[in-house]
Length: 308
Image (cartoon, rainbow, N blue to C red; front, side, top):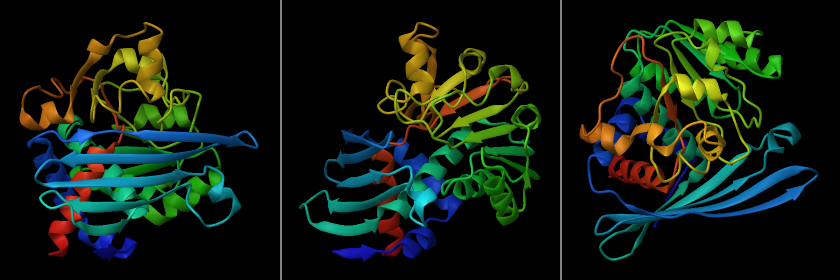
């Protein structure tokens, strides 16, 4: 079994190649997936332990083991989310790779959103707004830029302005203090926060905008309000992980604001051409990035191929 470092993950996951690999994988057979999740709260901070298995019979199976400790970035240099991934051969069960799961998660999550953007955002999108300046944010910015080369302005907003300014310097963008005015300017709005209160208001989204919701993964988390959901054509990466569990869609569904039928398509349907994406330049599209074990498996298989 080979151990794959974070540097090797990043070197093997060129954005266009990884996005194309995810698209190709979504056109193939759907894997069997599951999710195990444990929680513990200390000092009013919720810690999470995930196990995320996926299996494509005859091809491969793998599990990502994840810890989420939200206070890590405030206490030192450790990221909030850390993980390892183990990939097994699907024909004989041999362990093939043990991969740095934190790096895999960054690449997989950002490529997932980039694939959604490639299918749903306007090709002429010029202004990208990044809401949140955590460890995932620079990867999301790079991935969105890779699939939408017309992007010329990157705006960064964060609750802590100094973090927005640091990220903006790193990516050649501009830190902004007023979230409303930034959303009103943006062709693509990507959010990666742990917010439990809506940040992006639907009234602020301009016609033709694309909203990429990444951060929320529990029922209590919300990155956009109900109006953003009702104004948008809704798409998800998968119906397994993006509809019921994260609050951005699960909460309005449970309260009757929208029905499950409001979700027009997932990436399997879009990549196979079974459903259409954006229908007009004025349409507002919402993509909920729920992640999931199938995407980890697809990314691990891409890394395995690149390392051969």
